Image (cartoon, rainbow, N blue to C red):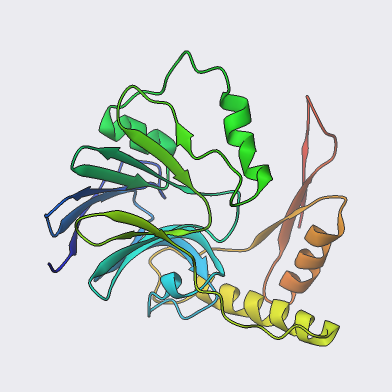
Length: 246
């Protein structure tokens, strides 16, 4: 079975939203997407990664932010973000599987409703703090099986959906210079990808700053590859304000 995408632009949708409909024994994967999703032959994405944009190799790295899908080796690889602040979600209804980067899009398109009597929504969305093997996956709905997937990719072969770990290249970080070199090279690759002339929609870097060390370090390193703006919260809790640092 030779899988292929049938893509439809939804100009009134949120710019980066997309949803794919997979039917068992049907080689056509129907995809509806917002106006800023990048669409190419055999792949689509709203993503940046540490490689050349034109090749569409976001399925071949763990340094990817955003999501999309790629036809490769007779399979459709649905790629999740390489972080725990974004995810994919899928819904299985009989022989139909819906996959999306947006829970609202998934529910609105499929017509499935969440269980209003469920009293643990706050905990459910917080469970990712337990780690990639400890979060609660399945959200109660009126019908079907709705699950969240963080970090890992989803593989559709035309008959079944499976999870697959992202590629994990061996990286030598036995010293601080090597670690810093990895960070700098990765940021440079991502910056080039964001601004690639082959893109229909280019991105600019924006950094968030907190009182910790990680965000400060990332901001300093990213400044060398084009970062010009950062934001932070001056106060926490109710009445928080955002401070823009240009």
